[in-house]
Length: 280
Ligand SMILES: [Mn+2]
Image (tube, rainbow, N blue to C red; front, side):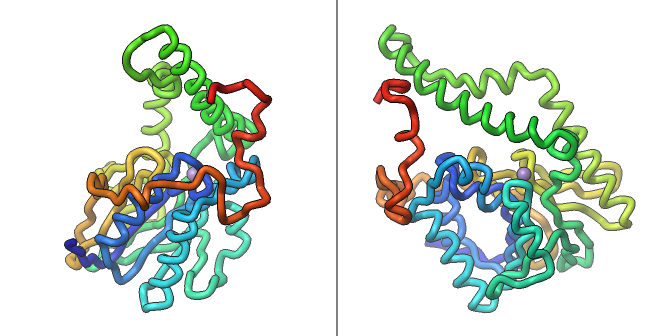
């Protein structure tokens, strides 16, 4: 196994505590990368999802343990909370063990370039001004995923081939989706510009990229629920977007128990469905 050593790692939108979180790929990425510093750029733990029902498999614990262990062993770990873990923003300026919690921060790269590091939800007009709408949208997405389970069962019964995603279809049909992404990127880049910084490193919209926006370097870490992306800084200050897809992942690592062993008294979410609502 080759381990790459980099100066910094930036991770966002891991959404621990959700079934969508690809913790096995994330742990594989961490095994293959050592860094002097790790930035956790928000939405690391999904408290919105946990408030609807506890889901906390062993792998999610393993990630937290690995980060704490690295922090103990001289890796500088900075945690910038996002909107799904905004409860932790109250602790900005304090340290959890060896992890520094900050509302936002400035990262000085090896080449001297200065980056604003923030989650970015404050520049998302929907979550900023219409919190109920963002929560409804989040629940709506989960609802679509569940309805899709029922639909694909029907399609199997009707002997329709292939897989068809209702959530994916809805996303393509929403005309404003691309304008929303561009609007967010522009607003975040503008914030770095007015602070006279060279760039910004953020997350939130689950859309990883490194690009120039009118002279400001806009960097988005992406996510670990869908795209499995990270940003790494090399020792010359060069930033790289890494798409991680470990095909040789240990199936034993990926396997998760049906019932959460970490919190045995909490019923798994599916047990809350009305009987017969979803096919087994
Ligand atoms: Mn977010």
